[in-house]
Image 1 (tube, helix red, strand yellow):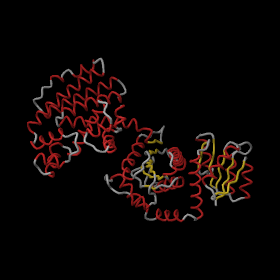
Image 2: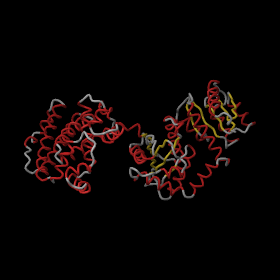
Image 3: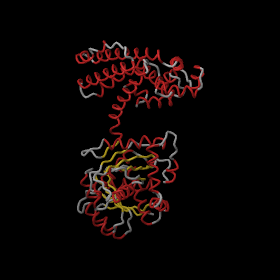
Image 4: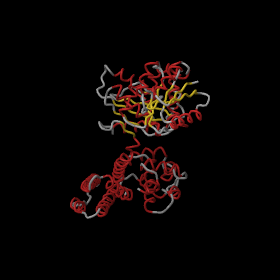
Length: 514
């Protein structure tokens, strides 16, 4: 049984906290209430209070003054500060006085529940009543640091089907929502490395259960598991904001922190591990805590642009005329949307067409590039975006046609036959074995030959063509996503959408609106 005190000069705030505890901690809590700091002190003097919810702004003795006296009398009391003012100054002073958490009013029911549970866990840990916490602590003090480092190494370099669940079972964090957090420490030296690592672990674990890796240069990664049934993103942000503030205050450095999105499955750990470092790389002196969710839109656009350009040049090198035509238009549209000015867009468009010409001349020395010669003047003086797009797309098709002609003359006849088969069967569900049988070779031979000739795997090549067909249908027709799924040879719409999102960084429905 825990003795909890709620102190606030507003009766409605007291009633709110009382209602939350009665509904969620029935039989676990004795609740005391006080309407002033003096009344709270008297209750603490005569009762063994474990947890206090303390308002800051009260007449007479305010909350901070009351906390200061209580921590001197009973330093083990867990104090949660309530305030209608979300200011760093109040939070810093409260935390310096030994407060456990800082919650802004009006109080959120789920935040109160989670904070109370965390406070109870801390009390149990101190009193030795929590066998689970004792066992975890024993592990962390001996073998666990090595297991943690191995876990994070596996997250960074795991294969698609690698099973990481044994690690989660070892740390007793199965079936949770997970947040990766990357932390960068300035001025880290060999002398202070161990002490700062211990400080980070202690600060983080006192506020939220976590596991932590070793330093990589001056960076370290943490994983925070959150209970699924009581998970709210507001709670995550509040907790990680508090932890970051404590890092900065107690380690006394301008620490930068990057936070991943919410991960629900261990098979996604590699992606979300990388998200934390992407967010960390976006942190700055003025904004030193960055959530991946807050920057994802800008990352998606720039990565999508780069990905489209790479796919375009890949298709150009193999003389894929339709693929080049489609990707050139897609690239120019994305370029227009991401460029900061018309002049910059035109400059990048010129660079794009110059690289197209260069690659074409490399692969077909007899290519007549006269139509490319006035590219600079055409693009520079173009009156509209459509004029530039039409001009560049036409040049891209010319280039792909020239390369295709060369490829046809020199391409292995087996590959030519297989590419014909693929183009004829894009609407069907076929395999490498089907294409190999059509070409009259073994699947092993075709796989190896295709990789050597096309510089790509058979599966990737086919998937790319199917996705380009799907993208074209989404933009140019009114077909439903289910119909497009069937038209590209997929039987499962969810699987099709997943593959599409992997390629284009957005769902089919989002792409149609894009």
